[in-house]
Amino acid sequence: MNKLIGATLVLALGLSAGVANAADDVTLQLKWVTQAQFAGYYVAQDKGYYKDADLDVTIKPGGPDIAPEQVIAGGGADVIVDWMAAALAARERGVPLVNIAQPFKHSGLLLVCRKDSGITKPADFKDHTLGVWYYGNEYPFFAWMAKLGIPTDGGDNGVKVLKQGFNVDPLVQKQAACISAMTYNEYGQILDAGFKPDDLTVFNYRDQGVGMLEDGLYVMGPKLDDPKFVDKMARFVKASMKGWKYAEEHPDEAAQIVVDNDSSGAQTLDHQEYMMKEVDKLLKGSNGVLDPENYKETVNTLLSADKGSDNPAITKKPEGAWTHKVTDKVDDKPQL
Image (tube, rainbow, N blue to C red; front, side, top):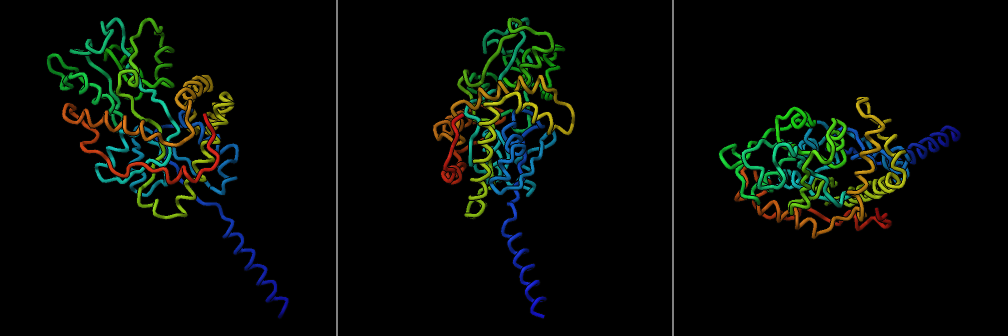
């Protein structure tokens, strides 16, 4: 009898220890498909950084029909990667998103134009068709046009907006004089399509005074009232930034890790290596902590477009849209 009680006690203690040591689940929803734009998270997973932080992380790729803001609002993720304009727009519309970390310090959004369209400066946009991404990516464009005073209704002295797919076909096929592109992705595709840099006029949104913070980490605000959730997110951010640091130092290996995690088989190693090197430029100077001045710049740009934009992201100054509560708990912040 005593042996039975002892065995039962040992088993109970073992089960209790197993429960105590169970890793915390985290679901991360990406903004787009598996690619080097998110290499830091895949590297952190591959190298065991999440496991070392006592986390069991599920990384969910995005896509053209997936809005991270809707996924997290529906309970399908604990944390999402999103652009600040889209996150603030969703917040104003009732989704209480809060920025807890900002891995990308610089923006990579471009408007790339064919020189043979006659566009060499922003004033030349008038009476042309411009390709624009939607699904939350359109706000920087409309803010820029509002700043320039150029209507986007397709009328005289305005521009016609083409709802661009996530490819470069409209530029190649002359459906648009200019298209949206990222420094680390579509710009390379444009060159691969046969264009030379001298064939193009390239406008970087940041250089035009309408640069906005891009890939940041966002959670639902009410969850930050739970100290256990804050601790879990701090461990997640620390491990993710460690992943980004490794990717920065080993770009080719990071590109291979991305390709290995691409279940679609669509990504090529050459393109991911190109992308990783360009993404690294957007990380420079970042330690994952949101710079309040960069946040203010994004907000002010969005608000300045409110009255002149046909599609404003926000119409009032956000309150409580970011916090250092999570990154303040991260003791070792690697500088990228």
